Amino acid sequence: MKRTQRIQEGSMTLENMKKMLQDHDLCVLATESGGKPLCSLMGYVCDEDCRHMYMTTAKNSTKWRNLMENPSVSCLVDTRERHGRNRRNEVQALTVAGVCEPPESEAEEAHIRSRLLEAHPQLKVFLEDSDCGIIAVRILSFLLLDGLTDARYVRV
Image 1: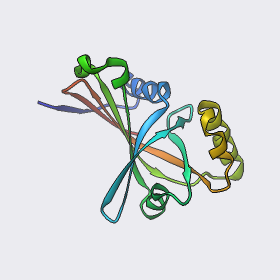
Image 2: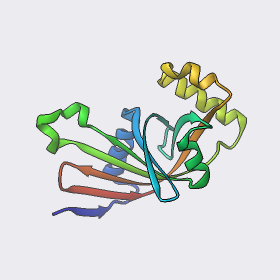
Image 3: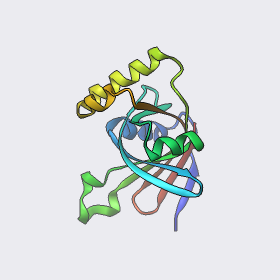
């Protein structure tokens, strides 16, 4: 049976969730428009205190249009690569709920682009394109599933 606990801000579990977010650089981004969900594999970076995640996409993409219509998102980061097929009961899955907001300034957007390029050099041509938009997700909560039954929820 699944057990869910609300964890306080100062707990070690929140720090573990933030560390998991910082230690990875790929997520599945879920967007929605008109009742139709869309999942996309995305490279990301997060800020130092894990209050925001940043990604990029073309402004003419379905995910960008979805975000313009409905800024609520969910992102999934997991450890399945580390555990392989025979140890799936040890996989951790971190669901990040958030809302997409535009960067506050051109300077902030340039800084985000620079961080994305540093973490994901393969995105250079994409990030230099004028049609490239920055997805800035303000994190609202974390839900960590540790193994098959241990779940912890944190609202930030």
